[in-house]
Length: 409
Image (cartoon, rainbow, N blue to C red; front, side, top):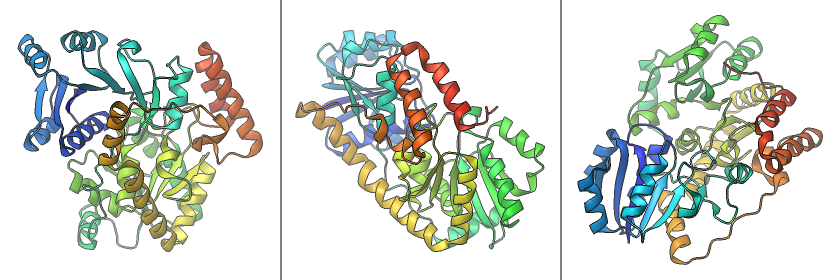
């Protein structure tokens, strides 16, 4: 089968990683798999080419002529930052191709939904959001991002010791950490607030590693006078270096105001057997609990108080940290392995059997840890958002207010 994967560029980021991993998995399954980056290239272009995959950047007339001759059977679009006019140009060039998309942020894309056979949502929560925003329930299927489980594993004791030594972290220090992107929505004050609680109530032998944090968060660290407890790493490049960082962290703490539509950092942390604490964010993207699994790869919490309690619990019980890390790794491999996900994608097209999942708000993973009263209120606000399209912003505002979430940065 001839499969073209389309993404906006091939730089660092979760969307680009998903596109690369799908393209490579299709190739490993014996397909003629190629990549098109519509606007710019990047490091991933080099990685794909080294693996024997043909990559093109941009859609020149010569490329479109070549594409027409090649005539792909399937075109898999990764929707984020894609201009509709470019997809329509490719549709005109390849009229017989089947178009599918990985819908990155659970919203209608810039190109018509009618050209798609399926729109893949990254989680049950994403499926809910997509339908609530006007997506076609019959075209919406849940298919998460693929994870290359081979590249991420727990680093050796020596490599972990070298990482800590290179950042002047004493051996007996409890290390918390989060890797993210440097804009405000990917972070939360809860990371600093819970660190402060930990220092005051548990131990001063603690460090919080922040990789690519927002400037607003760094300013908040200074405001709270906690700079001596925080290590700021501007960027980490390369999977091996990432593994060393994940593996050197005792607990990965994930709190962001906008949540995650998937969260590669969560999967990578668990593959390195580092347990994760995630904050549920029902006012936004909220797939993080589905990736981690409460009491499987870590804990899913609803506020900063519960986040602190879980941090303290994991600090006091190293065997529990090891248990959750091991279970989390098994979970990621069993659910998100790239070959398994790529096969599932192709089976929808080849077998023609794909059943869209009905939305059951009460059973969404991201709501399981709320008490009955809070859950009732949250489910009601989500139901209103599903039924009344213009109520989205108001519902999200009330969800934040009701759950006591600070309006970050």
